Image (cartoon, rainbow, N blue to C red; front, side, top):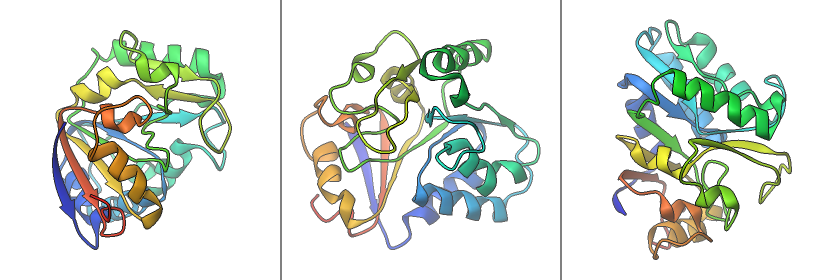
Length: 218
């Protein structure tokens, strides 16, 4: 993996710059740190014409559910992103049909290469909803798959992009903060690629936006 390491006291700010300056196909993720970035991006840019927003993964819940990645992103950014096209993963359809629906939408759009994909990292070194040693990690043919049983809470089924789509992205950015992620950061980015640490299998033009606590073991 080729990655650029940026350690700062405001990694979300670096993500904001990429979002505000971005165009084309942008793929976003869930999580508390990304939410801060989305809220700040919404304050700095109102016209998002020419931007298509996609999602890395989604929980199989309705779009207004507290666990919905779409709900978070919509409240923080998308509802104010005038001119943008939003491609929502329909978690309410369940993992199988929800994945098939998103696959159809992705193919109908011409199977776009993402100009920017923003990723998070779980304490088990998962990214998207690609959990350690699960079948979804090994998927190389389909762009989107369902995950019946996730590797960590909340224990609801998921829909996720697969590694070939992630790795094809022009700019891959991990936004990671907190001491509770330090071990996972080391497993994902300081060791050999391993399916037990799915983020270690992300390959391409990778930038790591970390705070000092998350980077402590690198």
